[in-house]
Image 1 (cartoon, helix red, strand yellow):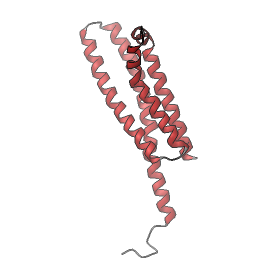
Image 2 (cartoon, rainbow, N blue to C red; image 1 turned 180 degrees about the vertical axis):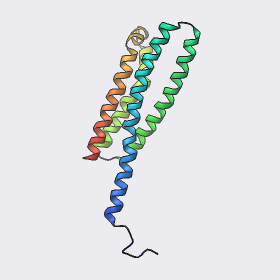
Image 3 (tube, rainbow, N blue to C red; image 1 turned 120 degrees about the vertical axis):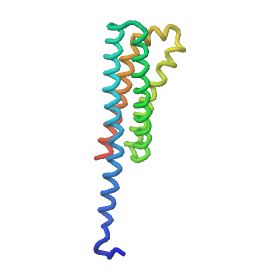
Image 4 (tube, rainbow, N blue to C red; image 1 turned 120 degrees about the horizontal axis):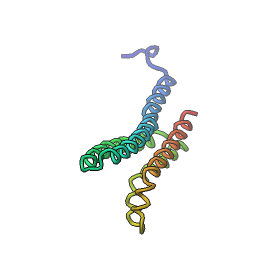
Length: 150
């Protein structure tokens, strides 16, 4: 049995919970930054493969990279949902907006396929749009982390 002098103070418990919450909430912007870097590397990798080896082997390599990026996207979405659950107030709404913007990355190919001539424009603008979506989501998540800390 703990004696009253050995029990942690209420302030210590609150501070410990705050640090634990901020640790988990800080994982979302870090994963989004990793996603932005991976998207940038994917653009460079796809361009170099298209120039160096225009045969079927490059298609297999690009599909494997795409599978890894989808796995990273799933981790980012899970971290975003956890972050939105942990935070409160304006920070929570910024994270929700960030997750919604990040989900646009999945909707862009579907929207482009439904528009007349959309596939052609998406082939030209798609990589830039993907980077833009991830960077806007990253900016919103950094604002949410800043709001949660202050």
